[in-house]
Image (cartoon, rainbow, N blue to C red; front, side, top):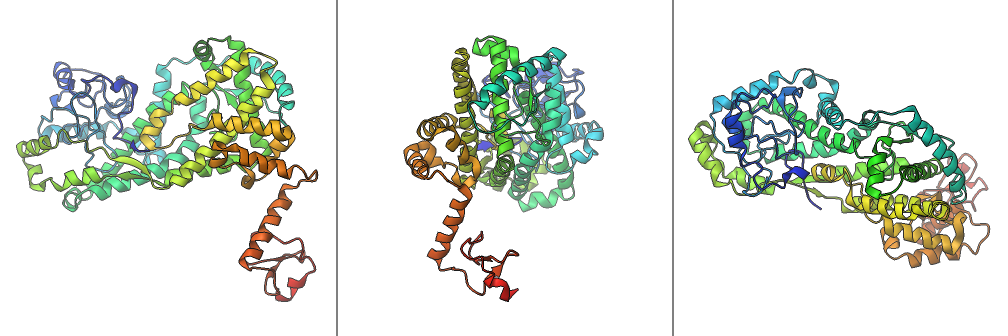
Length: 555
């Protein structure tokens, strides 16, 4: 899976117009006196048509006059490369920070460029000095743009009646869930959030996920610069990286704002994004979702409440699960890198001396105008991606299976709602732009297959034994088990013959067998635990058969 990174992706719904990025010159020529804060104001070379990067509208109060999508980029005229007719193809990003440079006419002199640059810097204000502005992404800018995006969507306010409806649904659903799983309730009623509250509570987790990706992209873009360009830029590189961080923040803010206005719960994707591990629903999306599913709002609310409560039961019973999921996301994000081979090839053809001559510079850039120089985000750790998708699919599949047992017989319309939810999940609402710009995908692509595995396991061994699979991560099905569940279920059936099944004992038994196979049997030289039992050097756990204190001599 490859994706365009921050500043390279035009992965938005408004990009389908074949004229995007090409007819911007007429627009800017006719609107040089536009007072909307467009950073291309008064410059025919800016090429802003109000579309092209993120389907962005214009915003009067954006820092530096840039729209949330980052289309108001003063470097567009300077780095006018990579636009293909018939579509907005990301262009060449010559400096670190991911400047989005879609196709424009390339007209305008160096003085105009520097003037635009100065105008943009003067408008940055506090967004450049905030602690959240440090690092590869300006999260202060991301937060500001996200809130502007949310405000434009005119979200419904949270009413007291919304919380009362959630409380009533919780009382009903908890009784039904207790008949469908042995995992106990944590006794908490989900809160009701609006999109702004969701943003505030989840932004720290997004920082944790996205910073590794942004750091990788920044380093890759720096490495892609020719040595001559690095020497010419000199101390400007640090400032340009800061500007690039702001541009990334703008794009991320637009993405998070869009997600905030479409997400239905804090655990919608199989793990809680709330750093405080809270439980919450966003009931402002209820009317839209009910219309999309063509079902009554009351039944849709009960279903959403049941999903959130099932997630919370699982997270409460399996304390390692949420952190393991977050670590899986981090591991995957750290394995993402930027393939800049096309950019590097083009940069080698650039004559540094031509940069001082605007006419030669324009001729040189026109030679590669139709080349696709878009860097691609690639995953160097494919195993981490598979592991993340498998874990998310297992969580979502288990929730689907529990809800089927808890709701389908009681409210027949719930089966239809769950089918609609499954179809919605496959469409990745709000996630496509995140995946396209960062490479992070939380879509749980095998959730339906995992739900079928859990269903068949429930039929074979019952609810109790099914839920005990969550007792240890080593007991969980693998990606192969999800695709071919028969062998996994047969293994559980064999274990069920023992009424005194103890998962921890099984782990210790496996460790002993591995020690024996590797020849690391307990000896007098092994370290001893405080209770007198020895721990083999090759083992990760204690052996129950050696508890006579024989290891005390080596203390």
